[in-house]
Image (cartoon, helix red, strand yellow):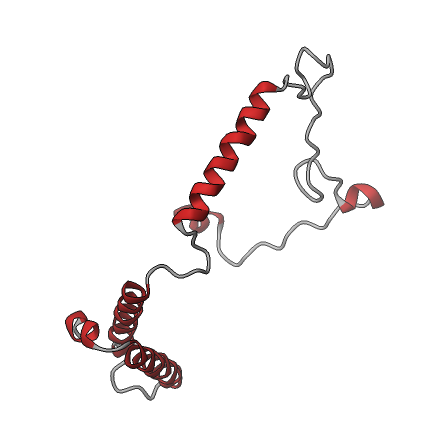
Length: 144
């Protein structure tokens, strides 16, 4: 469907078109999985149509509130960020490892099971059995 036709539709018609496309994609995915679809490539076309419908809806409604900030909220956050940054700059730096505290910086600890973690065989005193070799010869694995 062309975007020009979609722009002529009302919001209610676009929402209806969106739900119909979602339903068609859902049904076609099941048909493809079952091997009954006549044209599996139609999914790609439907997904593109759905994206067009969503784009036109977003153009008409403006930015969504979810996950986006209004200009006023962005300006307020920026102003608050500036005042917080000015306060940090005015206060003396008292970070670990700075000359003001005289302390050494703390070392990061390794995550459990990560590099340098205790191995199970080391705790029990037993060694693991060697891994079974595949039926392939040593020369074939080098070819990969």
